[in-house]
Amino acid sequence: MDNKIRKIGFTLIELLIAVSISTMIGGALYLSLKSALESWQVSEDRLLLQHVTARLMEELTEGLPDTYGLRDALEITDGSAQMLTVVMPWTDSTHDFSSGIFNYTLNKHIKPGTGAPIAEALLPNAAEYRVIPAGIIDKGKHEEYPEARLSVNLAPGARLRFTFHPDYKRDSDCLTTFRYDGAEKAIFIDDPDGSRNISRNAFGVKIIDFLIRYFDNTNNELGMNGSLSPADIPKISGLELAFKAESKGGNARETVTFVALRNAPMRSGNLILSQGSRFPIPNSNEVTAFSLTNMSGVNNEDELVLDARPSSGGRDWRLKVVFSRAPNSNTPLIEYFQIESPAGSKIYSERVRLPASLGLNLLSLGPNGIYDYGNQGNPGETALTGKVELEVEKMDIAGASVFVRP
Image (cartoon, rainbow, N blue to C red):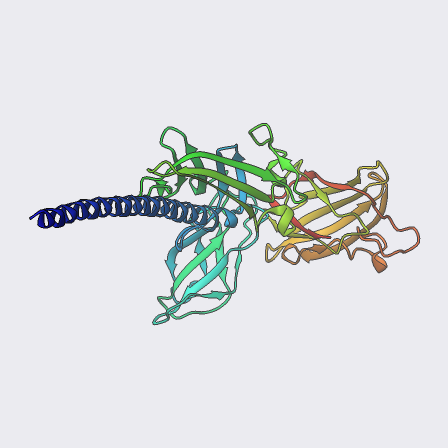
């Protein structure tokens, strides 16, 4: 009998030990599972945060399939630490080709000095647009919308589209603004299609900070006081975008990228001229390309005067161009040009009567290039050294640009 009780007692003790061990193992499994689940939730939260911030930065910089991003901006008009207003390429797709009709009025003004639009046609039964040759009709200084002229005949009904640099001073509805709203904790884009929150997402991620920094082509920061001056804007060639995002789970992520503005004047080399504008340019020893182009709004006896001055205070190089209109065709012409060095002392002039559409190569003026801007090492040749600034002293025509490269 006692042996039976002892056997039963040992069985109960073993059972209690087994239950205790099972409880410990179950608790450990629960804690492990809970820890794994929490770790998975944190990982998922961070992955969602990474996904949202990557998508947002891509839309800011590259745009969407049917919109432009900051990298495509043609011109900056205003900016601060949390706001940037730019001009994007404008596409007029309101025209169909009509048999025998080659001139088409655009629905926005073209910025003077930016040249003719890119024309494309979608032929009947075709799947893609293709580029076709086209020009712009120079009507002189007029306020009406410009006309593009096609150089080829197309099948009737072909869809046309013209892409160009719009003039925001006459068509303010072509501006695009990127801005941060601290109250909404969101980034907005305001454009001709309205205002939209591009940081909105289904995961509750908010943008808790946003910063834009501006740089020139030598990586000097501009507008460090929080706003850009009018003199800073033409110098901008790159942006640094930074924003901080926070998830519903309390995780935060900071994203920073640098955006090279492919169409910036200091990067592309195409400097749009206006009365009083100033630009740094390569000196006579460094320059490899320098031409006057995209002249528009030309009337008889209009003048354009450019003066290149070295910062050292040495002798400058001054170009005066006089324009006219051909009597029969009304074609804008470069009537003649004159070179002075120093300013006020004429060293060369020539009557050329060339169509303004051909432009003027400023590295090939006069016999053997003696009087042009470049330095060929000829005796008596004017050569500007050191840092040089180009100033537009006088500009009667509506638009022009210079293309310059070191």
